[in-house]
Picture 1 (cartoon, rainbow, N blue to C red):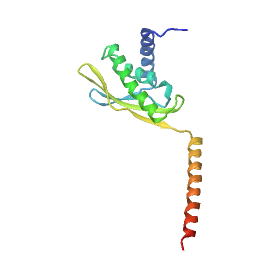
Picture 2 (picture 1 turned 180 degrees about the vertical axis):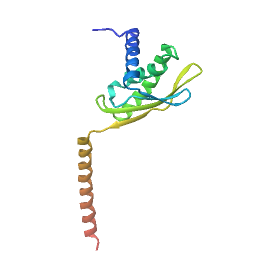
Picture 3 (picture 1 turned 180 degrees about the horizontal axis):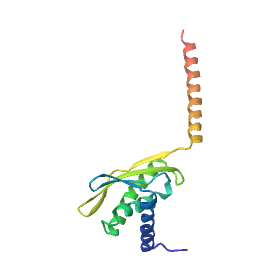
Picture 4 (picture 1 turned 90 degrees about the horizontal axis):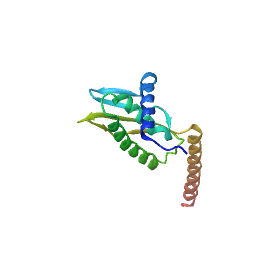
Length: 149
């Protein structure tokens, strides 16, 4: 079993960050020193890597990598707790957007916006369940109305 080494992961993330800059542009400059970081549409299990890589792409030349790792780690904990509370599974499709800025040598993230993409088949199941419940309610109402003199 391979052991987890922070240095190896950081180097891999730095390489992926450079790739992100060239291929995807996962960030948007909103104001001087204020960025919007976007994961794009991903499976939920990949969000932490995507956030960290994009942060390296944006702030790698400005902040020490330890600060980027610290800040993204804290953000990723917040996002994870939110995903769990929302009932989002590891293989569900999501998109995360969050504002980031450098303040006093620290990387500061705003409140993340999480979009959850539900497959059409799941939506259709929910619609059918709702229609069935509505039909049952209508029947109960008709029965109650027929009993009124």
